[in-house]
Image 1: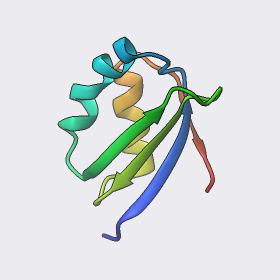
Image 2 (image 1 turned 180 degrees about the horizontal axis):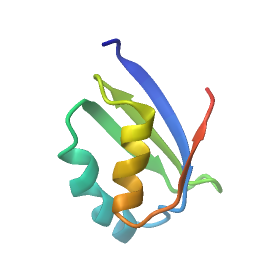
Image 3 (image 1 turned 90 degrees about the horizontal axis):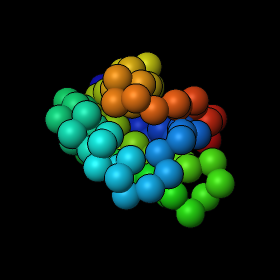
Image 4 (image 1 turned 120 degrees about the vertical axis):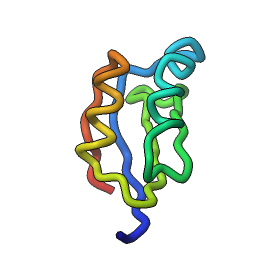
Length: 73
């Protein structure tokens, strides 16, 4: 599967939120790297994929208790 970059609008807005979602994304197979831009009003989550799908990422973030919607880049 090809490497892709995904971006999502979220409500992950502080270091505490990042700490909550961190184990869900760090332990997800198929994610090379991820980061949240909490300085952006849309709290943009960027995921560098190594095989994980957009739907799988959405499922992981929702399981952590956050809202997420894809942004087409």
